[in-house]
Length: 121
Image 1: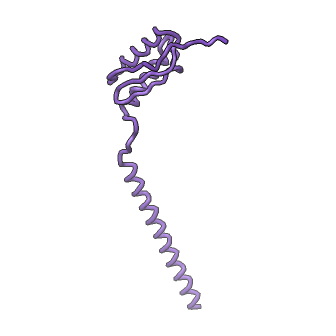
Image 2: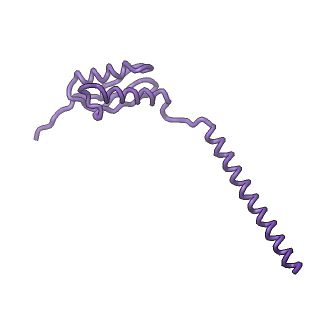
Image 3: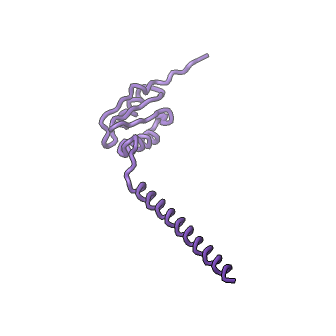
């Protein structure tokens, strides 16, 4: 009987030790995750550039006549790069003007935004 009680006590102690160890490990994991989340993450695109691109895309979407789905907008350090096609030169100039109207835009390169050419078979 004493051996059985001793066995139960030892099992209980081992279970408590393993439970404490698991708790300590999960607590350490939470601390590491918390530190990782509180450390600023590096991004390949500054927030300001992403915000500029979002604003330009929104303005192009609501602009009359512009085929916004045919224009790709990329912003690097405040410089806007427009690429794609538009039906005519007037709409290309309009897209440039929209991009230039957005706050913090330093310049616009639309050399890769060209007039759409229809190919007839």
